Amino acid sequence: MIKNKRFYKRGFSLLELVVTIPIMLIALVLVFSIGDFGNKYFKKTNIQMDNQQGVRLIGDYIKKDIRNANVISTDEAIVKAQNVNVNYYALKYSGNHLVKQVKKQSDGTLVSQTTIGGILTDLTFLTVTDKGMLKYRVSSNTNGQNYNVVYEVVLDNISKIVLPSSNATIIYYAKN
Image 1 (cartoon, rainbow, N blue to C red):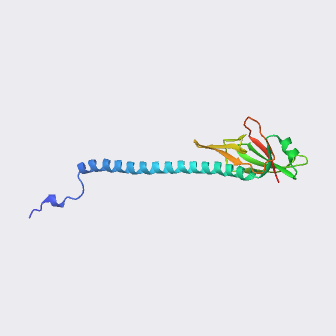
Image 2 (cartoon, rainbow, N blue to C red):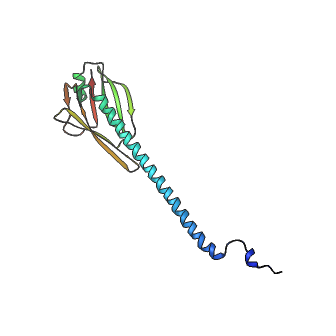
């Protein structure tokens, strides 16, 4: 009895392997490139979200802090002259950060200094509108993701506002 050898062959032919392996490699490259694109997009949106959150945190902090001020100026002497409290405050853009300073009314010496929020590209106090609203711009640029917001805050208790016509990076104020 002679057995037929064709029925006992196992494995793939060379032609089948030559056709199948490139097709599988193309499929793998597509799967990994889609995953890589998704990962890059996820990182980009996280950077953008952190950037926006940092700008809004600083903008809201400024709004909350100066809303109840009774004197606001870019001139420290004006705030000292109008202030009746023990301390007055300064918000300034310094070293790519928002810095809040508390100063003594009597001699202007620094009582405390606090850095607030993350890295900024710009913080500019713009103008006071005719409706008694202070406009300021907060900007940040992290890893090519640029984000800036212009805020307007209603100044409820203001007795004196003195801001120059040009933009300023520091503002002094006093609260009751």
